[in-house]
Amino acid sequence: MIKIILITVFLLIIFSLGSALYHLVKHKEDASSQRTAKALTFRIGISIVLFIFVIILVATGIIKPHGIGSRIHPQTQTTPENSK
Image 1 (cartoon, rainbow, N blue to C red):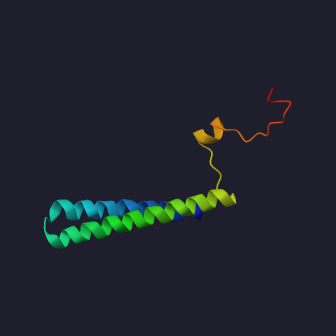
Image 2: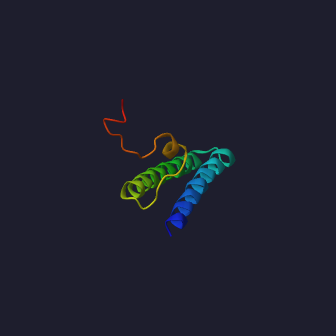
């Protein structure tokens, strides 16, 4: 369910970016410049919400990172005897 939400939000971001590009290239008037700014503002807002949502999901343990960072910093505890 969470993956579907994340993919949907990513698609909204890409659609908003495409909409801004379309209005920027196709119409070179003041009205389209406001549409471009609104589309980019919407994209930035959705991106921030998505970023915060992913941070909350990682912090609560609902999703677990499994990329390069988890291999570089393994989750092992060091004791004073091991650190010498």
